[in-house]
Length: 221
Image (cartoon, rainbow, N blue to C red; front, side, top):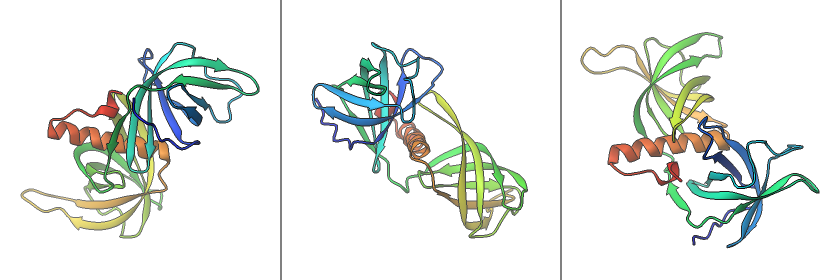
């Protein structure tokens, strides 16, 4: 049995394994007793979600520092008083994966850039890390230091999510190579939420794992 070492208040992303829609439930860990159960709540909810029921098997993922933790557990008890909360079985196995901030995965993802001027540009993400991305654009869209919004879709662990992230341009270079056209933008994500950071980190590690011929444990937890 692995020690969790999770701080109270950490956000857990739960997915009911029987739910093929990929819907995630964002909950807050209130505490746990090793070997017994985890106690959590849905922040601000007057009632627990109807898709979180006694006996449901769930996959849980969370981001702690630069590590993604993944484990399976079961809804052990649902309580309504004095406020809505629930117990999860203590996981027998916890997978932990470190994602370095600078690790980049080569991709080819369509994206849209929304500039501060109100203009919108088509782009393609050529590589992505937990902290930023390199985008290919057919024309100049901004200068170093400008902040824009980048919209794109990622799929991680069979779950698709549309992301819209603020990013600042760190470098701009003309494309090089045979038949190369346009520009390459190095962009750094700004004020990314913990939930989005977890998803981007998971996606990056999954891509790196595939490229290296290994399995991503958190994706199958």
